[in-house]
Length: 187
Image 1 (tube, helix red, strand yellow):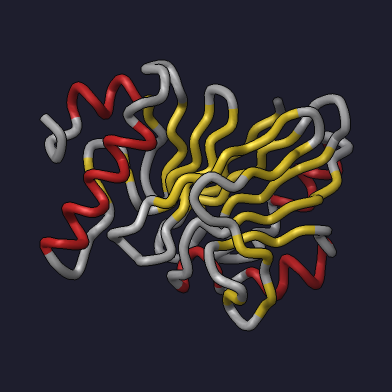
Image 2 (cartoon, one colour):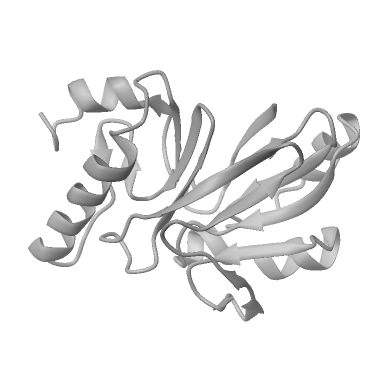
């Protein structure tokens, strides 16, 4: 797989491009901005942005979506909701899947930080949005939301192999094994 991380100026949010080497189909995970480095990266690797996935509907992960859609014309835009940032999306919920070239992602619902939080899990790679961070978790409004989020992470992310890469909404990426052993919210 082809992978790139883009640290956005928008609230230091992360955006990621993940692409199939065989088909050259690419996925953009979160669109806090239409970062000017994305187009040259796609062009340099001969990629076509086919899919956009929104992990949750906070402004720093969605405000660039209208420009991304206008510029790249992706075939599919996915979220937990039917519309994000004024754009229609196809709804993905717990247990749904989508394909990207010769691989596929499984969707798990990881609410807490927001009610609509989802994580996309590819073989060896998870995109957790703001549910799980390296050494932390996304903020929640209530204790019940916090517990819901921690439970979802334990059930859906920490059940993955320890060497699974976890790419997060803010900050550095990590692995399942590191977060299970050292994240203070779970130790």
